[in-house]
View 1: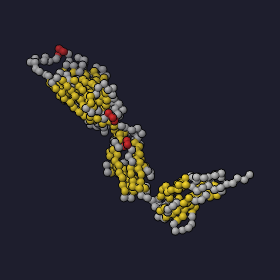
View 2: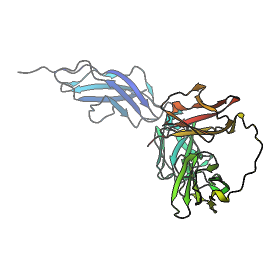
View 3: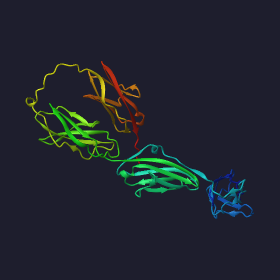
View 4: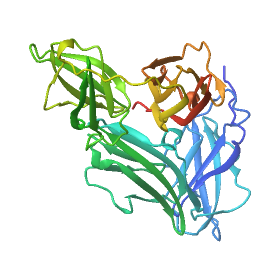
Length: 413
């Protein structure tokens, strides 16, 4: 029994997919009718305008419905046709309706900045930096990177392709911090993008830690911020004490915001040394600065007799002696806001976010100790950013202070 075989119908939807100065890429759809003989592949042919010769572009049949014709003369005009081939032979050709100019179409460059790079990109010292900056443009754009207007460091690796540029730093250092400019150019068309990179490290220890005063069972300490903040704001201090007899260190307070403090409830007869660590978003300083002198808590009988004074009115309305400070937090890490208020009688303290009072919200914890008011924000997200207000109220009046909190997201590579 002999089965009749027939050629397929012509391929469909033949269109130009891409053009360069020497190539033309075509794509199409399979024939509507294939038949019993099936489909073995496609033959691509082209004819240069002004001639009658159809040239085979592919030596062997291709199965895919996309093909790039190479080796074409620059600025030539060509017609292209596609034939579907099977055992019965070639189908009728599908030919382009208009001639194609072999010349790359200029597409102005455009950098597509990823969302997480539109804000400051933060990494710790020693971590890997791997930034991908996608772009479009034809012909292949020229790519250039600058840091603060100068060529970038040789320790930074740049890899460019037709559609993106990758900045790679195997081991980030503080010197890699700064503003980077990426420029992508096609002929006279240029697009630029700015990146702000911040490489952070542990801070140095505080400076000039000293004992200011000793009275009763209290010691007043004072110090200066560290010389090196680790390229990130100082967010607190940890204060420790040690009895001279044992020199075992115990933490008095953590995440303390100011540079002076009174340590109370010390044991009479003991002699104390103190030391302080700095803290930023990376963590505590590797070392602490200790007091050179010790503080001896003398017994009651050895204290000076306090002269008697006439009674006077110590009542006063609330006055903030230490304001709130604009700061930023890292998403997912607890943040604290601190201020100090003086008032008599003791004031009622209210915290507000964007002028709305914070009441019974499990995301927040509020503390008030010896006039120091603290708001702890648990694992904040960018939505927790805003204007925070601390208001103190007593019978004689009220006062308030404000600050802005910005919550940044650190992406993980």
